[in-house]
Length: 80
Image (cartoon, rainbow, N blue to C red; front, side, top):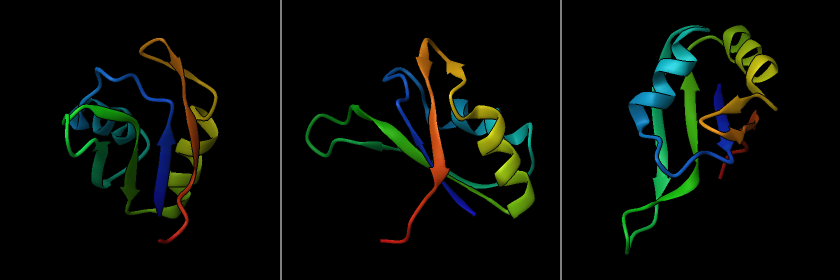
């Protein structure tokens, strides 16, 4: 399952996000989206998890939780 993670701190890196989600299960990929011109974080990213049950548990536990001073917004990502 691919998870949208919003309202991220601009200081976070991909590996910070990955470590947080690994507590719930295997992380297939983790990507914080960056601005093409400035290479700064746009404040959101995507985490793909191998197990749907683990992904749903991560969404349930982390949605609305404070992380690095910001309240996270998590939901199942919709395909492009």
